[in-house]
Image 1 (cartoon, rainbow, N blue to C red):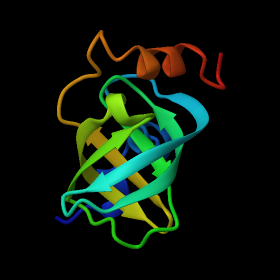
Image 2: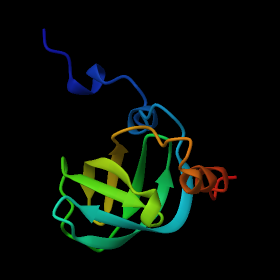
Image 3: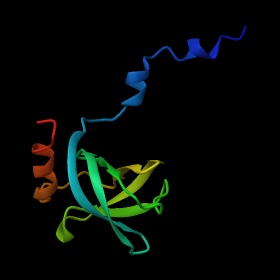
Length: 115
């Protein structure tokens, strides 16, 4: 007997939409994104965590699976992989958790819009 697809997915939609391993901190901060080809563009950080971030950008160069670097300033660049792109938003996973010496990133998480 085949069950209707609706019954196969009994989890609430809001729990499916947020499967992150940690809380993201809302922010509104300009950052620099560098592609693997060396092109740089300004992006707006929408949220961040120790393992990733979401950005808003006018650039149409971002592709899922692309390797990039993102930074708050020249000495704060973090390597990341683009996990998803939806319109002008993109989610990135840092290749390593934000290191303890990246105080600009850590301060931004502490001072995020969500308190």
